[in-house]
Image (cartoon, rainbow, N blue to C red; front, side, top):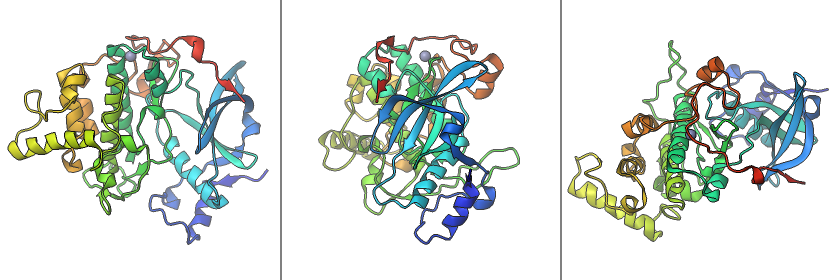
Length: 378
Ligand SMILES: [Zn+2]
């Protein structure tokens, strides 16, 4: 059986004039991965758990120590007219990002496989569905929402500290695992912003220097910050993630989105932006606190004033003045949130990572009733 490696593909792509992306890994740093036939390791089932224009997600399974273990296989759809080498490149790029991340709040991707003419990521299966689904069931208590918010921040902090911005944070891109742990999924739009700056001797990446990316509309528009709608503007993908986290949090706590689009034509966003403008003109040097913040609907609809000011600082209209994801997680109100999830894989591994057995007291029951957990069949 012929194996395709990332190195083979990268070599081909380096020779391809049509390949213009700037975020591909340097070939010499590339780890060697094998794309093998899905059927060699996994049995494909008829259960489909997601079907969209970009991918279809199906359940696959294999025997591990006598037990049948289920995984999710995300089959990437091929875009119309997309050359095979670009399709493979797209899959490899996403796979490379996903394989470099190991954190309780990020879905673990095992392998990239080929099935007939399509490529599929095999990843851990989170049977409780996505956050949007959970929100729509309206079963989450306030403490449970705070816990999930903190888990999302932890996952994004981990990504940013490893030089990667997600670029498409939204409730649909977070799933709930069996042990109440929220996991960020889908790295198809992620940006590797720190590859030019390798880690120092302590393994830390320098994040002071910002690499900017040409604006391009991607992700779900309601979760995107105003700077991406401004023509010819270059933006920092990390500040974009912070904004998207705040919009996700607003939707989680309030049950609806604050506006349709953060642009000049959206009345609700204009009112929000006007409040910021007034504050910045009247009190340019006073930081946003619980006693000094833009007067928006946030104060009326959000349940805690600390949450109001936190989200407002994450939604600063000027990305360079926006709170970082690190500061958001360090916020005293966030720090005080009781969380079901371990802070790192290390803690999880030391204390056992099976459901309800990771040594972390389970504060909430995030898991919905079992009636909707049956995957729909093909
Ligand atoms: Zn919890």
